[in-house]
Length: 340
Length: 256
Image: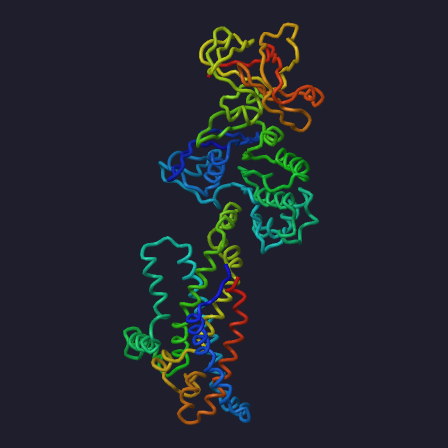
């Protein structure tokens, strides 16, 4: 178990983070660039000293600024996979892994075999693809048999074609590893695919924590809403009727009152050419301002009383063009409203 | 814009390169090719001594200059600027002054030399170790500065990763920093060796000119010049050839 309550103050940047991660979970640390994600990992690894607070793995205190305890990285049971992999170019793949096993080549080979990398044992890192290098870096970090495994954007240097395969490998390996596993990413898909729980770091602080489902239904900030791709509004509610800041009204099935956040998944937003029939509580007229293809669906932005993004099928999108007037409808049960 | 060199600049630049080249042309013209091989074998002692002194001095300078360069590149300590200035001193110091200072400290009556003399009965002047000390003194700054630059160029994040893999500071230095800086260290060693090979002033002042003990090639050249100038030209040409080879070999490490 990793117990973190730390503060890092630098000239241009402050980071505050307090959380606990258990041995049986994979935690994703998600946030925009410059939010402090890498600083958090470096602090846990012992590469960045704390200004205040402490880090402990189980009963062992790694660092405590108040008590003057600061174990160097080599005395923390930690494995660190940096963003660029950082394999030692002057050593072969197996020598890289053996660096973490006190040069025990046999033990290193076992780790390579576990990741299916034994064929690469004798080649130099320069000859590896981005995905292979990242897996070797993972094998090297695992070979130390750490209590805490830290991964900094492990997929960043993997080209798109290999991403799915490397992600599957990464996920399988992380699932088998008994350790606290902390993975930095700015990709919601990666976090959703691999992690059990997500910490959102923004502006040097943890702004939200929860599962991906919780983030989708209850985004607490525009950043999280953008990350998981849902419509985000703030407003004042009276028993589920939300008066949105900046104009517009949303009916929610959630009977909340007071200052609220309202979130709507784009797939719950329906677009019509004529006034919709049936029972949707939220209906308004707007104008299509942007049409943006994504993989299997199309994201259509509609300006009106409220600005909303709808996800429609490709077939559906062919019926509208930018500038067209459309009707928007959303069921009240699809509007998630919760106190700010 | 078309680039051109103004006439005045071009003229002075030509004179400059001429100043650097003309002496070697003179040397080639005056070299007595007929007796070249004979001169060489007669000076065998000086050649051998030069090899021993310069190689040993280069190794000493490497052994001390690498840690010193590391401390300057990575260390955080007070007085770092002063340490760097001290390292630079032998480069700007007239060698004869260096020799005099060595004599004053490590000579038979120097404040350290006298202690060594009392304890072990060993003195440095007029001995090969004395010549090695003088050569090491002048070679050390070159090795140190090149090593410092080499260590500076090593990306520290590799050592950080090594630390997270359980490597202590010595293992990080030996297994990561040292191999990564190896080309620079080799270049520094070659440069230091070349400087030691050519050392004259400090050696003749501190260690004296004793045939077979302290008379290295440059000393032999200087004293041959007074008795047999032709032999001096032959020996000089050897040192020129060695220098050119060093330049060609080491250039790859410096010029990128």
